[in-house]
Length: 170
Image 1 (spheres, rainbow, N blue to C red):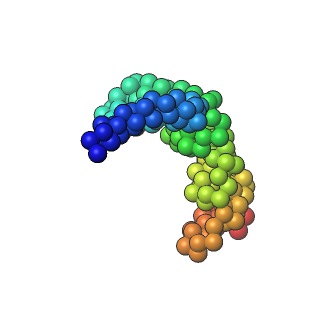
Image 2: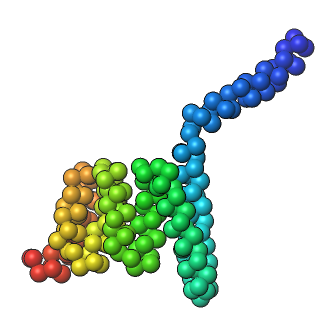
């Protein structure tokens, strides 16, 4: 029995050494790289938005946002289908009031996750801010096809009605 107690740690260590390179290859450098860049971008974004801006340090916030943008862009360069990085780029661009770029990124999120009703709302908002209310309406109507939840449908109907009233189509 004593032999088995000492053999188990050795076998586990050997398995770890042998399987680690295979696990790294299976996970792929791309997945960990994209996730790592996205995480880095979130750190910069959070610093700029939650620390620098409230403290009135505009230049520092802008630098944090620049670094966040670069990290998010690296994430999507590594993995074009990485939804969170596109969503984070869209959020960053919206905060910077670059609604054209925000709409581009949010549209990618909708394309990648057409069943995620929450993905449609920031796209519609960016389009509305660009004065493209008709496109925003189309996006909200398409969002209704992504859910059967009656509360979400009611909320979407309210947003659609609000846009229609603002645009004079109702």
